Length: 121
Image (cartoon, rainbow, N blue to C red):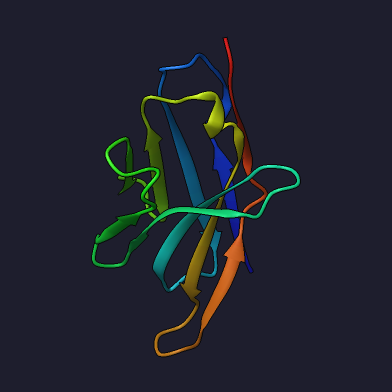
């Protein structure tokens, strides 16, 4: 069993920054990728960016230049730092991990519950 927990969301003023965490635990041999999304009620889930096992990152065009995804010192933790937040960034931010639970085994997909980010003065 694999669990993903996001944290770090909250209320932030326009122009501020946040660092969100995605912590994976359970039966994990390796994580091949962690992907961040955000969801606004009534809208399609939006891809924010991702990091793969070799550390390579990729970001949505709307996030480039103000978004950084990195791996933490704690095992199986990934961070999403967003700077220059605006009201349009208000959303639930979710992480998805592609996990291999055994050497040579299949990759399975796991989601966290999300963390709310609200940008407002």
